[in-house]
Image (cartoon, rainbow, N blue to C red):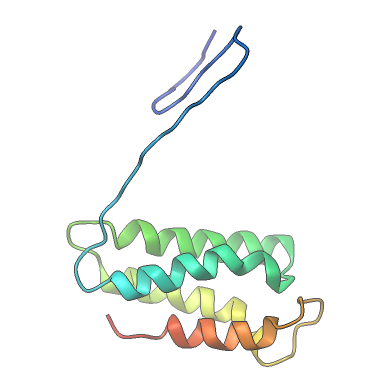
Amino acid sequence: MIYGNADGAQLAWDNQTVNQVQDQTQHIAPGFELIAQAVAHTLENLPLLGLSEQDQQDAEDAAKEVLEEVTQDEPKPGRIRRALSAIKWFLTPVATGVATGAGEGAQEWAKTAIEHLSVPF
């Protein structure tokens, strides 16, 4: 029994093996490709920074907001800039060496990520 919305759900039961695939390709608005790539790479590597659980979640939410916005027909640059500022705010303590607990190489990676997140779009 399923309660609520099951859009995009994949279900399998009573079988030995299951192979399921979902292809959810989204196109990036022209001119936003570099920033989308930088955000996706940052999102992928956030766990290496040793952020608190709440900061990690907030940074991920901001990154997802950017990725959602750049797939719109007419992305709103202000919304993207605000979300990018939030991501950079979480990276700055690591980049400057103020944050402790980050993995080896995290400081340099955070500096590079901030640079990539600062490219004009």
